[in-house]
Length: 380
Ligand code: SF4
Ligand code: ZN
Image 1 (tube, rainbow, N blue to C red):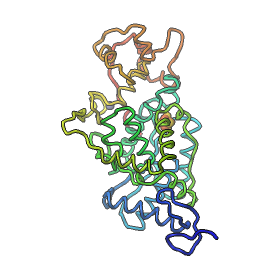
Image 2: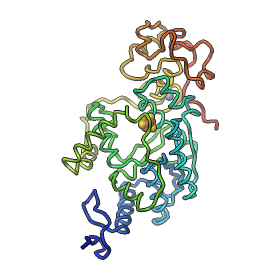
Image 3: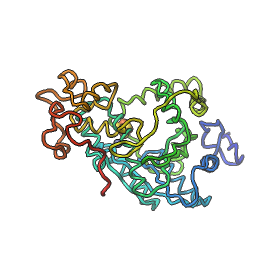
Image 4: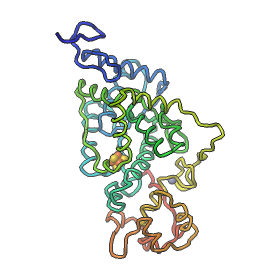
């Protein structure tokens, strides 16, 4: 005899909830998932009536479910929100173009407005051109930094009050684990929070699905018949996050509450009051939030534009200082910063057209030899 739904007691159960272990029928699972998301929004006071909310839409399951739920709950509970889909095109052939097609299909179905910002427009570089220049490693460092800023710039362009992202409980647990493994205290402090406050070019963020298990998001998308894109990015196998994800899966196999436990640890983590963290200011070049004179995006971009793609990665402060002070770098130092050898590594075509004459080859110009450039203006 089939198990009955533990909520309504009449219909046969269609699933056992990964989060609670309850056997539920399809309608009761959908209702429970929607109500829990609503409660998370209300309890966290994530939105105020009249706000414009930019939903970070990648075409993947999390953001597709988030966009669907926010539209549904906005109507059902009268939040009074103006919802907009905001996508970032990193320029990854065979991956982002296909996932953006899924976003466009969702736009057609939902009727929500959609705005797309691209790395090519903002930074003059696509991820594919960065990867050609940088090699297989560290691409996600560039991509993550650029995406964070791209979402903010897109949201500002739309006049959005908030950015809502589809991060789920598994993402939050991975982030806590990853930051512990890296000893990244600054990020640990904000990793498992409900969002961020904004300021200095950053728009406040919230994560309405941060308590939702990834497995339940997949189930919800399946039962609602949502159309999403599920192929992994071509650069993902090199990402450090992948190792944290694998470790979390192993932990979960031994202790099913590992995801919730790690999220809880991240939320409860408190730092010693006398611990000094970098002060938050504004980037001297682009005005975006930064804890150094230049924001991370501007430093990474500087390295790319100079043909020294590793300038902003790792512990190269001494070499950055040398460049800034106009001191020449040795061939060995240039190599460490990823400069191409004598007969290799032409800059990607799309980039060559934007460089000032004579800057190809970092040994020709010191750090301050030509005007530092920030992310491109938003004149589109
Ligand atoms: Fe960007 Fe890395 Fe994610 Fe690919 S896997 S979209 S390169 S952050
Ligand atoms: Zn900057």
